[in-house]
Image (cartoon, rainbow over all chains, first blue to last red; front, side, top):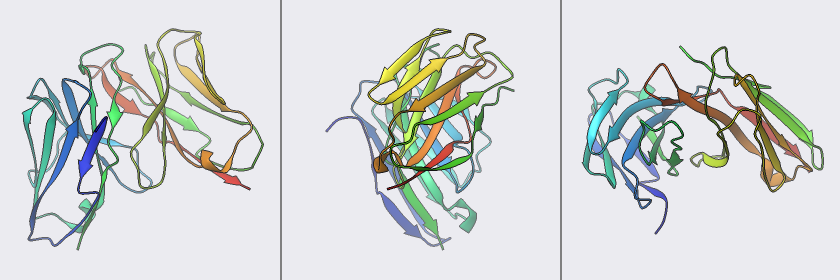
Length: 115
Length: 112
């Protein structure tokens, strides 16, 4: 499998549930990202990992908890979410986010609905 | 901070027509990226521009990096129904450690 993959593609959860989103990249990149995309709003950067170290947390509520066990895998653990957290969650990867010409490649996203 | 303004926000065109959209900023960018997002999918990179004045084509798509480094445009020639989607420009934010900044997108609708 090539590129950036995300599972599940769709997720419906209650506000008291705990779930995790998974992202895997097969591009040999060193940086991985989580974005949130809500209807009619620009892409919002949530977290950045570079060489497995978190380098950016864009004021994201603690009910979202990222984990990056290695450069190829990225998780987003979810707990006690709110209905307004319903969105498309996109994972991306790039060679190295500090690079001047760094280009990000996106996964297909997980469509999350919080009831 | 650096922001990217895309226009138009949406376009509804007839199949076969040419399309032009642009992206502007009040600050300089050293790289311009154009992505397309199909409904329910993640953005896919279309064209990357790395030099001021650079003109790059990818099939029916052509993009240019503005000379001032504050703008870029994307043209699509002879549009077809599968061109439908949202087109985003993006560039590394020099004031935020080169994190990508995205424009608000141009939603393209094509009438067969």
